[in-house]
Image 1 (cartoon, one colour):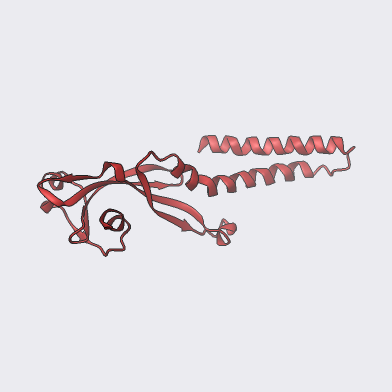
Image 2: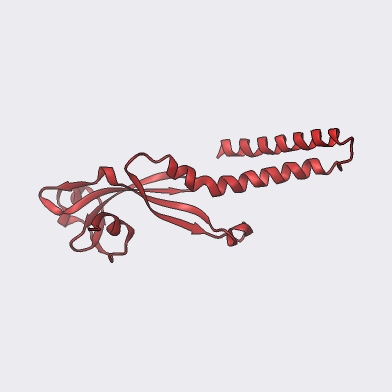
Length: 168
């Protein structure tokens, strides 16, 4: 967040400098208020670009084998442009390369889900998935040794994790 604040100020300073040079080259024909307007517009433009490009930059940085399952888009009253183009604020990704099965429970798969949100550190949540019963459970110490001890939640086949792991 600190680096984005610095980048926002740098964009404003650069735009103000360009407006200052343009005013000088025009022989003083540009009004003096164009300098702060250019700085403000550049800072606002950079902030909007940064918010909208966050999801793409985050998913581009994911390692091989990690697949985005859900992207949540939202609108906010204090960001009126999001009513025109909603902004992606959260991402749920599956580490497909790290999916494991237990020979003692072949119907159950262990998968890591990653949750990304703007201005929030990433979170990892291991999940147990049973494709036969279309259910899933959070991984606990007891569930790791005995999947029957897990607290299973039945979900329908449209659940993103079930759809990703159980599609045949």
